[in-house]
Structure formats: structure tokens, C-alpha cells
Image 1 (cartoon, rainbow, N blue to C red):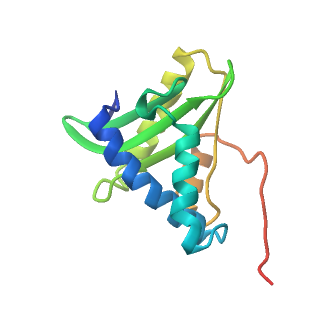
Image 2: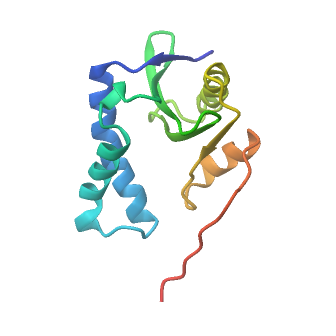
Length: 152
């Protein structure tokens, strides 16, 4: 089935925001970047900085991913400069993963990026997220820098 991207409404944003804070905090803890006691606070601060006006923040494009009328995920593209965009988040909700929807959503967001005049899109992938890493490589994304760390 084909997916569509629909601009996220206020109710969808509120649900996403609640999920995103917890998810981002967990990803940062898994990566060893943040301690549990500070993770949620730092995640909230990061989202407040990036999306001060919520889903209406200028130069940010938050979409609900749908198959028919069913919400199956979300994707967030930010325009960083006149020519560069950045995908801050993409999520395919549980029960819908492994069906190619993420790949379709990434291709659709590239079309959105072209329409607003972007020439490139960047993204970040946590090192432990091998599934996402593999998808991005298949779609033609290349590594531009890698951070490495060793716990002593």
C-alpha cells in the first residue's frame, strides 16, 4: 500500500511530542550520552529549543504518515538553510514496521524537500540503530562524520 504524508495537526503533535521526549531520552541513554536522572529534562529542553511554536514552528515540516485513514507513523523535516534540510525524526509505529513504510516515507519527504527548494537532506542515526542505518544507506545517504567513544 502507498503512504501519504499529512501535515501534523495540534492533537497529533501533542501525542507525538509526549512520545518523542521519552523516546529521545531513551535513545540518548542507550547511547551512553545521558544519565537516566537527567535524560527527560534534557530531551524536553532540546524539543523546546527546536520547536518553540510546536507543529507551527517556522521552517519545520511535521507530518503524520498514513496508509488510507490509518496513522502509521510520523516524520519531521527541518529547513536549516536555503538549500539544506535535516530529518530530525521518523517513526513507524509498532505493528507497522517491516512493511516498507519507512522507505516510502523517506522518499516522500525527499519530494517535499525538493518542492521547498532544498538541495540536500541530512539526518542523525544512533550507532545502535542498525535497522535505520541500513535503510538510510539503501536510500543513498552517506556517512559525513562518525563519533566514537570508549567507556573506561
